[in-house]
Amino acid sequence: MKWRSLRGHSITYFIAGIICLHIAYVNFTAVEPVVIRNEYQQIVAVADLATVFRVIACGMLVIGALFLASAIRGWIAQKRIRRPETDVRNSNGLLFRDSWVWIVVNLALIPLGVWAGYEELSPRKLQGTNPDGVLCSVLVVIMSIFVLGILHFSHCDRFRSPAWNRSPFRWRDPLQALFFTTVAMSGMFLGSLSRLGQSGTRGFWSAAVFGSMVIGLLIGQAIAYSLYRGRIIHD
View (cartoon, rainbow, N blue to C red):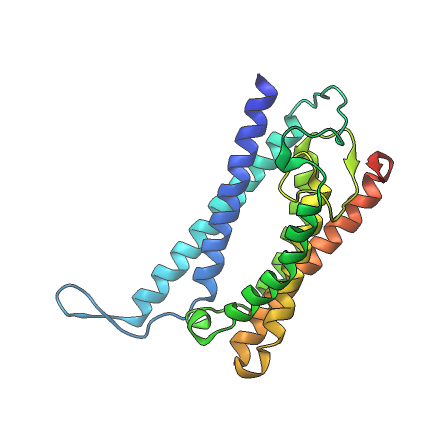
């Protein structure tokens, strides 16, 4: 069907655009090598290296912008076809039923997130990283858009409010998945803060990256609850 084709192409263009923009960002902000030897052991001039970095960055920036423009155009042109209303409270399969097992799993996301955040600020993990305020600002915007995109492409007529006794892994239960993604990311942020004193500037910005993702998720969900409040089921 045409609308499925448009949706698939738009998602592909969007992902490709984000990847290209990330490559451009990395090349714009990376520390360029002072000297480098080619296969003949000749030293390449610094100016040549700077030109290569800038050409790659500018090229990826243009390509990424074109991909994103194509994705937006595809979403605008896509015909919106409503699916028959479904009851999101219906579950098929034992793994997706409301159960005390999911309370244990969901609670476990908190200490697991804290441990992961603590490990991410280890000296070995921080080597080669170069986060900054620009990346944090971009992440806030991207995560907010991500939340709205998840809800839009889930094609649910009704959304269940989050609960501790449900699986966070269902595509057809997006508010549940987003809530516990926020819980896990908040744990990572707290874990990174616990190691902040011994990780320097890189550690500070790495922790800020986790915090920016949490802020973006919260902003996106606040907007989503406002936009879809009439379609949210409170169990």
